[in-house]
Length: 254
Image (cartoon, rainbow, N blue to C red; front, side):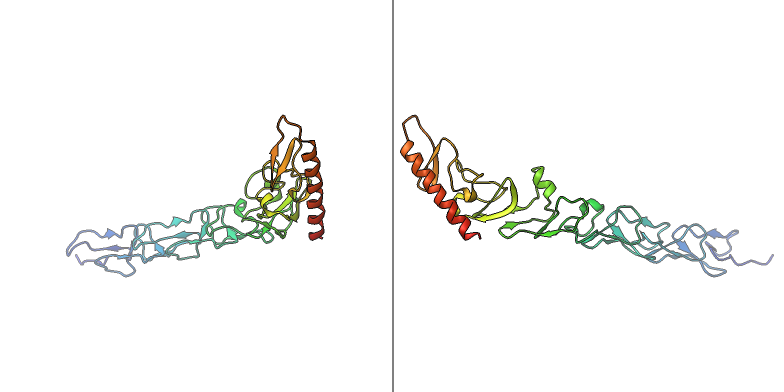
């Protein structure tokens, strides 16, 4: 009986073999009468008895030779057909599902802190800007005299949850208008940081931290709690000094 050649996708394991052997997954044979199968290239895959390899679909990859299937790209990454690896989404984009062919751009001027973002919640205002309270709005420039870290928002500020616009040292804001910045005449009294922040025993309700809180009086540039002794004259002088500081601060901030 005449010998017959093995069809494509199968091969002779040895001379005189009684039967053809199927090419295993990850390999192929594209010709009749093969004596062996070839490994699929990187970025390709094949099943059992394959006569050729197929490119990985978008959102999948094969990083080694001889793969029987392609792996999914994880959220935060994407790939094109026939890829050997997934690529992280660039800054300003995200991919929130597995097997993404492309990444989605953040809304407005929002961006992401690092490449590889995997959810729209990672899209925030870039450094130097902040998100206002309006639900749908673009980022706004950080006020002069403040620093806005990445992701700053007014919602965070009202909820006392970092990051939010920070007051620079030597400046202050008041609780009634947390984005109106005053430059302090005596910068040691204004430590910066959260809105309406003054050094200890200074009244943050007053412009530029220029007045001591109730039941405190000034000693030099600081304020000290009142003691049991009578200090009415000292308090009167403190009030006058504080008024002068406030007036001068308002003048330089015009």
